[in-house]
Length: 153
Image 1 (cartoon, one colour):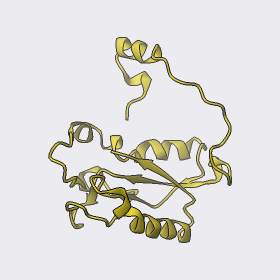
Image 2 (tube, rainbow, N blue to C red; image 1 turned 180 degrees about the horizontal axis):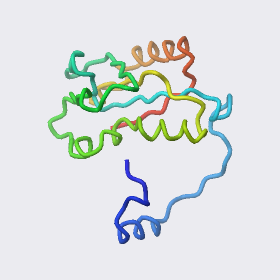
Image 3 (tube, rainbow, N blue to C red; image 1 turned 90 degrees about the vertical axis):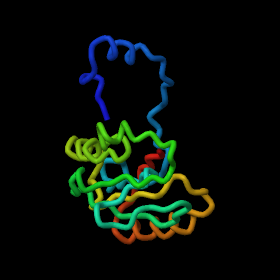
């Protein structure tokens, strides 16, 4: 995931001139302030750790991805033949922004990064994923993770 400062000047200027909506600072959820929360990532990119079972069509299970697993050991097993993997190949943070999350923790914006993140197969009907999502929510709660950031792919 790129920062504006890392872009070539012409692209940076173009992005800075882009009209974006402005939002207030009212929290969208109740609970502890963000700087007291433990945050996990939930991606729909069909990611697995090398050695885990690859995702299959209509797979409703999720995979745990340790925060510290090396990028080289993360594999994308998304089943869609139309899925563009070029962004993932150049920068894995595009689909699982672990480094950016660590930076937010180091800056004190969030309280802590969870030990594990999670991936689902995004090319699955949402209604089929609901039982697994409920199971994951309960697991996160048991493990003291109180915030999940969905990274839809």
